[in-house]
Image (cartoon, rainbow, N blue to C red; front, side):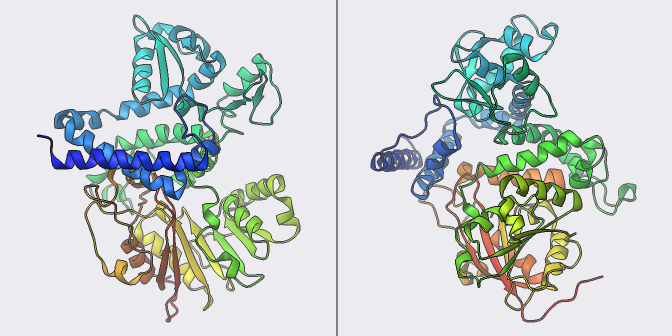
Length: 507
């Protein structure tokens, strides 16, 4: 007799699939297939609130069923060697396999021809191109590429989304995403085989995969060594991160990326951030918070705002607000160039300005209506976050609100904390039994990012309670949590206000 849990999970999957199908029928649309070309627009249905909840239940229930049904030693062993899939992904992306297969069309290409085109020495491959075949087989199992006949591969939609150029449906013209200009075969090959240029003008997803399977995977192998590193060894003020050990540097990853010789990695990192945004709901920055109710002329400061891509979205949606984007000198220079290409009227009108600022010092803007922090605090350990938040607190006006736009980690067990009881929005909606309270594998990306931040930067993804504690220690009070629909990786907005007693920055 099957476990009652197995039957309950199977029923939940069936019911949730029916909900997704019902939504698609009502909207007159088809759910995207693995056999169809990837587009950001086609994927957007998966992020619709009515669909994403059902999708989460399906993924979570399916993963729990797999965990029940598959032998435990096989599950553990599979996890132990899963890093090889990451390594294979890097080979596929960085050796241009995707573009080679795109060129070949739906009929695919023999692995020997792939090796000839991407410059990998065929002499390094064993009989029947064994090494390439192993990479290919791993990719097929993960539904990245398809194999219709032995030794031949063609792109699956997962890899089509990595494309460095775009093929217009129904046309033979090959269009480079860099400028939309037609390229002949020779020039196109030169473009996407050029390591320093290959990600420019793309949707950034391939850059994210390349970066993650490079610095992150290499650093991950040193996690145990970093955790067991003797405290105070080598006269270091703080224990080394796995990244520090892997790349033999004492620097945090950001100053390391800015070093001479890392120009390609720095450029790839910037493009990868844009690719990461493609995984999030469209226009999520403008949803939830009451931007429209802010007084005309209110100042919004995007602290550590990069080139201002998020500030641009706010400025375009709310023309009565004034935006100040703060970052380091080099990033600010790139941000001004970005705006000149994307939203020059924001600069010329004075609605958006850029300001060089180090957020480890008190903020120079003392009349901000909103301080906005997106993807900042998860880069740093608690002590550093408190320093950043205190520097904002001493510059805050009485009516200043602080918005922290980050992922929120959930525990795999049920919780009922004081913060969840008193702060609106702090508690995540509970999924139906027998799913795990944190949705299990449906939210595994959150926990992998948590590990990645720790491995790369001593950073951490946090729970609502952990953010509330950081805010309390730095002179802020958590007012509410504005939750976005839960998807594979959701960014929520934690809104804080100044505590009544103004803090002074510790010198």
